[in-house]
Length: 275
Image (cartoon, rainbow, N blue to C red; front, side):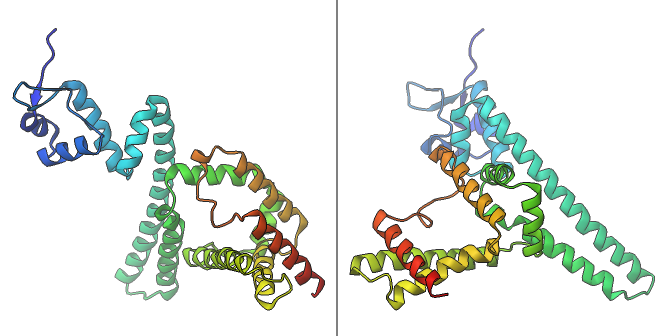
């Protein structure tokens, strides 16, 4: 059976996209034409149409073009895994939206009955805020990375440790919490580099301030609980066991050179002796 070819305009019309979009996908290596005519025109096939449909579906699901390119290169099995993760996250988000809609409808019914129930209105606000908090991580992590983080937590923490963490940290972890913690880790990282370059004494006020911040970062999470501290150690072991390409975030903020680690260890030892 002869292969059917489409010029760019025909193919774009068949796929409901613009010719400009086809040219851009060709430029970034997502979808190149199967052939070129003698006159240099792009020629596409029905197989190209199937590939384009996959690209458009993934784009609709929220994947970046870079992620789509990686998924197409890894093949169907990998694509199926990622789509399953994406589906699970969307179903969770749908459940959150259903809860918000139910709260709004409940408030609407009260207002129609001329009952101004401020507790119900407050509940709507709280439900919406909870939904926003649940979704902020999507700005920083892909669905696959969020799945990896969840698997790391599951491997490292027992149910007893989770209950302890809920006791110590009853409130939801917010985007502002993450920014604050990242700023503290950034301070430790940058100061260690500066102090090593200066040949600073671990007992100096600057080095002791770094030690204080680093100590409080660990204590704020674990509250000195040995079970939680052990779980944190196991979490990092599992993290480092992952291939670099599968790690859900850049480690540069949390790792130090041997000189920086030595200075930090010495400064922490002095700091803890003085407590």
